[in-house]
Amino acid sequence: MRRVALLLGLILVGGTVGTLPAPRSSAQTAPSLLLAPVPGAFALPVAVVQHPDSDDFYVVEKTGTIRAVRDGLLFDPVPVLDVSAEVSTGLEQGLLGLAFSPDGDFMYVNLTGIAGDTHILEFEFANGVAVPTSRREVLFLDQPEANHNGGTLVFGPDGYLYLGFGDGGGAGDPNYNAQNREVLLGKMLRIDPRPEGDAPYTVPADNPFVGGGGSPEIWAYGLRNPWKFSFDRDTGDLWIADVGQSAEEEINFQPAASAGGENYGWNHMEGLQLYTGRPAGAEEPADHVPPIHIYPNEGSDACSVTGGYVYRGEAIPWLQGAYVFSDWCDGKLRYLRQENGEVIESGELGLTVPLAASFFEDHTGELYAVSLAGAIFKIIPGAP
Image (cartoon, rainbow, N blue to C red; front, side, top):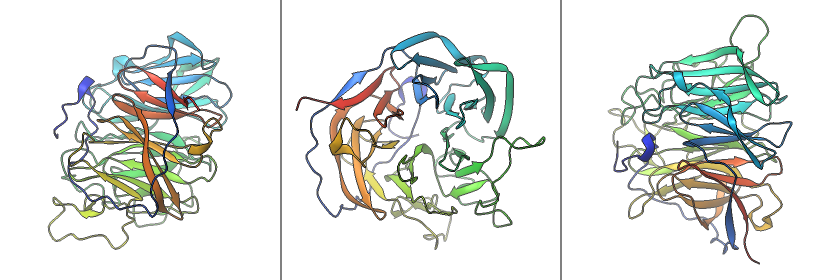
């Protein structure tokens, strides 16, 4: 599973060697920033989401509960949802993701059941809590191994639900799922979870493989374990952080104008390199979309990328338009800027979050970093 013995039962595996392309311009010197803790003590938080119609934060705990921070200030000890009795918490399993429908009336969660398979569930949401009796399963996905479950689910600017799934686990994608467009593992999906009639979901007519060439739910493929993805709230661009195998951690960039169908290369490619464990005779796919950014682990404590957001807040003007992310192992907060799909600047923010598991964007565009150790921090300006 790699050199990191994953503390607290979560493994987000990364790599050891790689080649980092130099940005066209050198990084600026980041101004002083601080981490301000959010009230509350959380058990293995892996995601935080704000409700569309309130200032409440909802914290996803890997062990199977969702808790609220009311008005962004007051920790509510009563769970918003508790599915802990049916969640497997081994390895990369557990309650992994949460999304609210754009109107705020429904919540969707991604959980790993006791048998190790993925369940995407819908609940009505009323008075600040989930309505247990409204539970409905939207999608079920068999997971052959205990790792590479992905877990993020997000409503895109188009109102559809996007879901990220890993390749099914096992080192090197032994079943070659990521390049197989007939399976949903190793993919980004795009669905409508509120269809008319009895279907659990419907597929948008403009998905890239509707009518042939692959499962119609697929939006993009060739992913190993997308651990967090997000849309730029201003541009609609999609950023996907994909955890590496043994060479490179990568971040993929999909412009808002994309019609989908991108092949991000795994398991023929790992970052910018041909993957050493690829199928016999396999070379770089002709349609491979290279990552916008990679970083190696050789000679460092990094091991596994944690995706974040493009900063669109007002408190830190210097950071405007920069994509902020981290690494599970070294916890360093990093940033990069792009123009026309090319990185023009990258660097570090001078902040470290131990066990950096996730990021969170509030309604104003301000960013927060989430530590699996139990803390959530707002990124704020330091002394001038």
